Each structure stands twice: as structure tokens, then as C-alpha cells.
Length: 150
Image 1: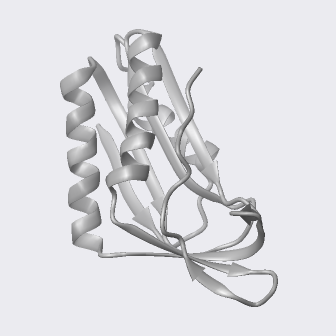
Image 2: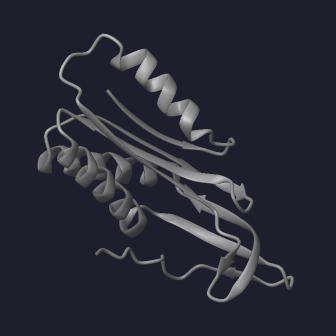
């Protein structure tokens, strides 16, 4: 069971994870690990104060890309389930934008797949972000924050 959703409604990541586990994992065998990532909107970017952001997308194109990202994760790791929920529309600082999760028998696959899902989402999913700055300006975000690894 995979959850792939794009929503303009407020996102309550921990509730979504709890609902998924209660509905789909309560009687399933073999699940030994889960890893999740929740991304929230920052109130700063490129040295400026950001007071809001609007995320736009083409629904069918974005949904297809999310399906491709999840399919790639299953090719690389022995996953049992995934979750990828992303907000669109107007978002305010500290509001959740995305929840990504992976379930597997072992932690290594869950950790690696969760990170892969998030990084692929950031680099290949067709979302467009427009920031509203504290000084009244608006600007399109032209690049995503790069992940760093140790």
C-alpha cells in the first residue's frame, strides 16, 4: 500500500502516519522499520525574510512523477510501503509542506529509501514556488536547497 497525495488542505503529518499505521500495518507481518521526513516552510531564503509561499503544479504531470519516484525506490530497496504527501497552494512559515515515509523489514532500507524519496521529490517533481517577502516583493524560487551529507 502506497499513499501518494497532493493536497491544498493543511497537512498534519503525524496524524497521517498514525492513520496509515493503524489502518494498514496493524495486522501486517514483516514490518520491522519505518523512517519518515517532515518538511516545513522556512521563514527565510537567500538572506530574505519570507512571509508566505505559493506552490503551483500541473496535477496529472506531478502525480505521474510521484509514481515514478516511488517505483524507483521499490527497484532499489525491499520496501513494504511508502507515503508521499505534498502540499500545494498558499503556505505560511512553520506549516508542514511534505511528509515522506518508507516501511521495510530493516532500518537501512527504510532510512535510505526515505532520503531517496525526498531528494528525488526535491529535484524532479514539477512544483513551482513563489515566495512573498517581508519587504513586499515576490519572487519565483529558481533552485532548491541542496542536501548535504556527512
